[in-house]
Amino acid sequence: MSHSIDFNVDFDSWPPSPDLVTVLKNQYPKLRVFEPRDGYRGYIQFVVDAKLTYELVMFVQSEVSALVRSYGGICESWGVMNK
Image (cartoon, rainbow, N blue to C red; front, side, top):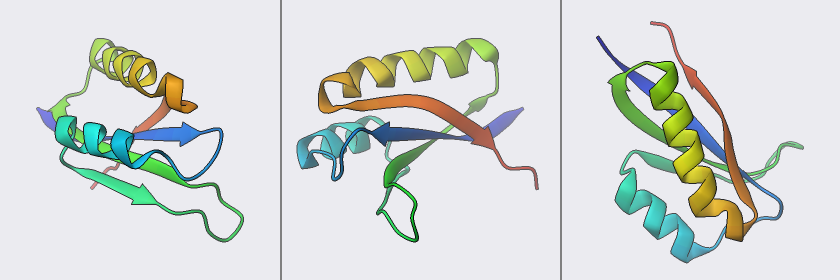
């Protein structure tokens, strides 16, 4: 069974590099940039449609964190919305 899995990328400073946003969007087309508001920090969220497994989540977080690290980013939160 496939799920829509949301992953968030948080940054030390805002806004993220436009070049990085383009790279992430090319890799994960279902991507949204959430601007800071109401006391919340900005972040990038992308969706992976796949079977939910521990290995998948750890792989995506590790790969994306390695990609965004030099931009002050980290991918360490994720979730699946129940419908």
